[in-house]
Length: 368
Ligand code: SF4
Image (cartoon, rainbow, N blue to C red; front, side, top):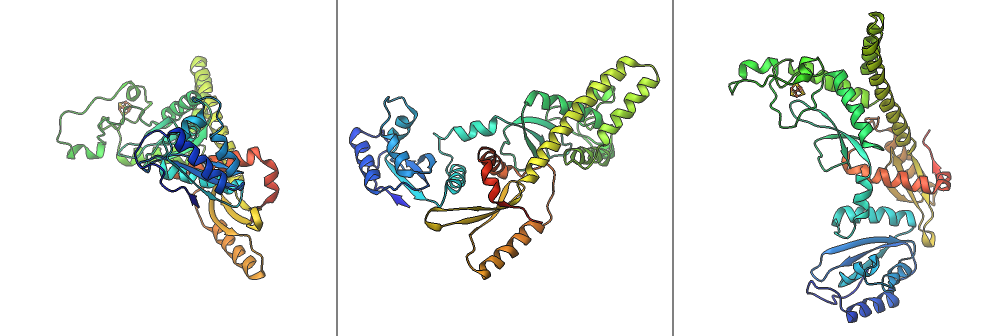
């Protein structure tokens, strides 16, 4: 790592003299190698993190902005010092940048947040009566389960409504009081709420009104998770049976409405299948050539880096890497399109890297 000495201690905008000093330091010390850099304000706050295949060239470009309102000029004006560190490759720089942004949360790094918020996720809340929600971005609720990312929040919302209807899950506000039938005798508060229209028309089991037991509701939540994990088609089968029964009774209008609902759920199922395939296909050992022979091997499973090692050069090292890979790929873990919240950024980064660098997949060795 190479850091400037403290050029300014007070949190203030860089003066032309500060900028010249920082530029001269970059000119004198930085090299054109892959790495990440941090712009640090006078009070020590990391205000911006960036990465480059050629750190020196990239950093000098900040001092060549033609207009004061250009992004680069604005960033460097907030800085009193610049730090940088080298990594072996462009891929390593991308990873290091993502991790540094998560660690420092620099206020000028808005691009990444925008990326995550661009996508929609399914959130299964926790609590006494979980519900399904379509949300923008993975959010920071580590107690919830997230599925995604998906395109099209509105369509996702519609499909989730059908899924909630098919399974009788609630869709009301999170603060809704929950009183299960088997808890009624324990309930000493004011009179229960009577439920909403969804209870009356059989679209919700009514956990607000003591209309179902806790275990009956939990079973429907389990079915929702099984559907989202791709291991059960029960909600589709139930809708199909209902549609066929309506058609037999010559209730064609209702049958047509059920067919549309079925279509939306099948579309959701299709999205899940594609997502699951995309996640599962990001499972391999990926070798990356580094600067000065600093080659690395990344063990990637389900879109997340599980281990990183120097590329082996001896038989002993190869054997050790093979043993590690066997362990990484053999460990049991839930499949499907569920991804822990704190790992969604990594999944999206890897997916984008291999999509934009398809030739890199040739370096990937899948486990057998
Ligand atoms: S019936 Fe009760 S729990 Fe179900 S959606 Fe309506 S208010 Fe919510």
